[in-house]
Amino acid sequence: MSDTAAPRRLARIAGFALAMIALLWLMALLSAWITRARLVQDAQQEVAALREGKPLWKWHLRGPTDLVAGRVFGSATVTHGADALRITSHEGTPFELGLPLETPIDAAHWPLLELQLHSTAAGSLSLIYQTSESSAACTATAVAPIRSKQTRLSVDLKTASWRTSTGEACSAPGVVAYMLRLRMQVPADTELKIGDVALASPKPPILPAAIGADTADVSLPLPQGGLGLPELAAPVVRLPAGSSAESMVGLRDAVRAECPAALVLPAGVPLALGHDGPVSAWWDWAICGLYLLWLAALAWRQRPGVARPWIEAIAIAAGPLWLIAGLRWGPHVSIPGVIAFLAAIVFAAVSEWRRRPVFWSWLGRSWQDWLWPLLPLPVAFVLMLADGHGLIHLDPKHVAAYFGWALLQQWAMLAIVMGRLRLTPLPTPAVILITASLFGLLHTPNGSLMQLCMLAELWWAWCFIRSPRLLPIAIAHALSALLVESGLTGHLLRSLEVSARFFL
Image 1 (tube, rainbow, N blue to C red):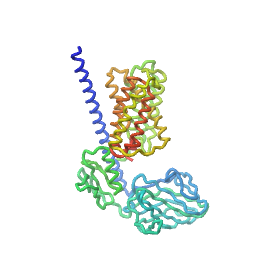
Image 2: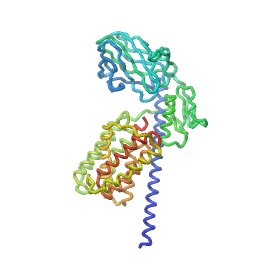
Image 3: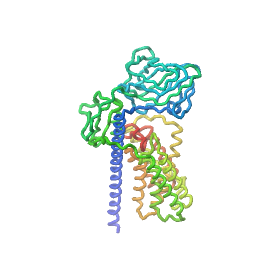
Image 4: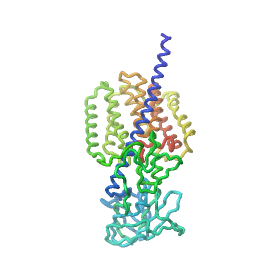
């Protein structure tokens, strides 16, 4: 018996290791596949906008939150309007509105700044731009008059006279990545309404009739290094074949820092010009409704024992996966996706309150319960020393909130999902692998983060099976993640953002 036990154990360990390596590889493939699809989708939307003459940079000003810092700089009051921002000047002195720059803008090829506005009195408009945080701010004073009762205003940024605060001449704005402000001056008690602000071009860029798999103005990487982008408004730039998700997004950002309107495409992927547009929001609502009905039916049929642990585990994981892996968590959050996520958490809490099929508790009872889950912390520290940077300051509110977020994640994954999986005929190693894989997928499409989270959750799942104490694992999770966020993000690990926020 002892002669065969050792080889069998080695075979199980080797099988577990091979399965783990395969899952890590599949996560990298999934991350790259989603990123390539997203780059193609973004390029399709840009081509469609250019062909239809729509602006690539447009600001819909409706309330204070649409401005930098959520307010006006100066003696004026800003309020929300149905179709325009409402501003009331108090003293007749100049006030400024900062336009948020989520991505760099190309004011060289799109130099016409167009505003929808209405003023109850005459005034003047000045402009301020700052290319980067380290560059000097340039101001164009009184570039256009604001007339009473007018509805539109257009300014050519190329013909304006730009100067620094010391009076030195500035060139007209090109690529602006840091600041663009409107400075307005109208008499006291004047009400000013500002709607949409956009950049337009007097000469729309010429696009190729078809963008095939080999069409490119620039193919990266270049032998001599650097980007070497041509002087085109919207060049087609091809990324290197076989690039990781982090590499593709990093190169995209580098390209757009020099040419914000560049069409950045993966290698060997054609661009379909007949873009059908985004999927209707009604599909999201329909799927969300069906998911809620499914959860309600499962809750109605629940009994003291868990008769279908597989079904409950899938039902609880489906909502968060649909929100995150479905790229519904981003600058424009999907409300059906958030509802599905919250419904899954509520269903899990109600199910656990009715009956707890697998024992677990919150607090550790021995020093081993608190010490073993901390093993990923020194691993994160070593990674930071090898590929990181000096620790950056994190907001205390963010730190405090993350401890709660880590506790929620580990409760859902270990106590709820893995608790159901342990009631299935699956062997314990398979339960651990599935739990860790689901945890990794909840960080889609951030490939490196998916892999790190899967490896960490493998360890924490083993710790939880060994000693089912939740709080020590949640604390270890939060400490490890905060250390990574503070000292490792920016290179191997681009960020801790997941879902559609990864592409920001």
